[in-house]
Amino acid sequence: MHPKLKKREREVEMRLSRAGVPLRRYILSMTIALALSGCIAEKPWHVEEVTGHLPDLNFSLTSDHGSTVTASTYEGYLLLMYFGFTRCTAECPVSMARLAHVMRLLGDDANRARILFVTLDPRRDTPQILHRYVTQFDSEHAVGLTGTIADIERLTKQYRAAYRPRSRIDEAGDIEHGDAVYIFDTKGQARLLATSSDSDESLAKDLQRLIKTNY
Amino acid sequence: MDMLYWFTPWEESALVAVVAGTAAILFLRGCGRSHPRLQQKLYFWTGLILLYLVSHTQFDYYAEHQFFIHRLQHLVLHHLGPFLIILSSPWSTLLAGMPHPGRQLCAQIAEWKPLLYLDRVLCKPIIAVTLFSALIGFWLLPSVHFTAMIDWRLYRLMNWSMFINGLMFWGIVLHQRPILSVRLTPGSRIAMMLAVIPPQIVLGALIFFATREIYPIYTICGRAIGGVSAIADQQIGGIILWIHGAMMSAIGILIVARNELMPGKAREQEQPG
Image (tube, rainbow over all chains, first blue to last red; front, side, top):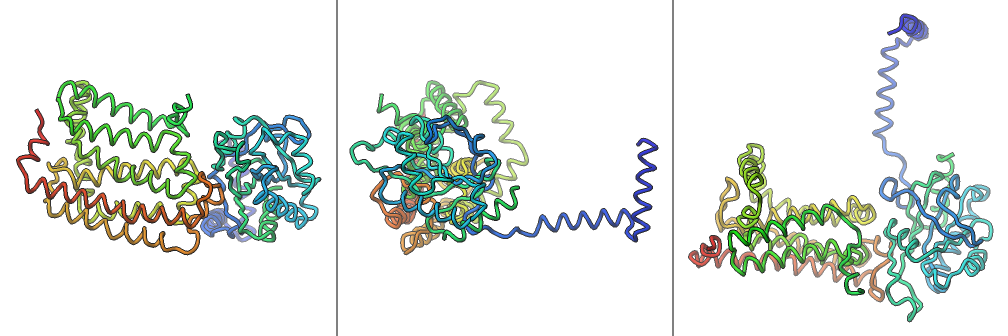
């Protein structure tokens, strides 16, 4: 070691010793504290945590304004991604109304969040139709996304969302899909998986916690 | 064109393709040299094709998104597929299909001490039965199942572990000749097959009689087949585990008993040509 550095280390040690904490013991106690903090489990989330189990957000789609957007467009925002289609009469309107309510519960924090409504029926859901649909629920924070069937299939496959574009969409007009809300942090990392069984309040609490720890 | 689409993999896995391809090539080459019986060929190809179809085609999409199809997939991976492959006694044919260095390597590995030790441990009836039953139970624990169905790495680990464990268990109980250095009596092999029945019945019944959804992941991510409710899906899955899983043991027991009652015929089957 460089003699100057060695001298500096000795000075630090002496200063710490003077404070009544010998350096060795100081390091030891810090190590134990760190080890313990790793052992004590973090407070669980209200909704399902999926950190590390689902891939980071990665897509290139068309927004309801007609422009091409990618995951990096929304970097810095907390994202709530939902797969649905505008002609859906069951789960989608309920889930979208719910997400809009959660946004209201977030108050000012909602400005740091975006709802991404990804259509499963890109043949019918043009950007204009999507724009009209998402603004009905939340004109400020909701974004409608569409693309080619292949693009959407790739995205649903990544997140294990059921989607069979080859099945009889056209005849029945109904698409089998889940009710998951995939929640990504500001860096695009998948963190939580909310469902219709989670209450709006607990979802809002988790989102607030994520916003606080993420900035 | 559309028919071919069904045979394309839903999620490509190089490992599945390489293992299935290697097994098929070795067996084909071996058939030319060791001339196995028609019955053996039939068992081997049915087993291998079934295993490939459930794990590397569009079937996999349905297994990911419908609980009862997932149970069917595991019935093939853990029971039917390995069962048929073991029944075909493919080892001598596969060995004959290998190039000379490969055969030498296999002979060396078969004498490797740690492997012989592991063989003695894994062939202990209690351990083999516990591993077989516990593995089914482990992947069906609600929280484990949830994570395995969303994380593709865990999903693959689950399917591979089921297949390898199936191969081990059926290999121990159906194989007549000693496995490396361990020889089990027909009685203990029959007892092992009987012992794995109750755990499967209990697990299947627990799932069948559950009044609430134990595996919500299929509702969360969406079901592949419309019109089947969550509880109905769960009940069909429970029935598959309950009856069909235990059924394989019954067939296995009949096969072992027949081989004991008709030793001549069994020997003829084991050593063809």
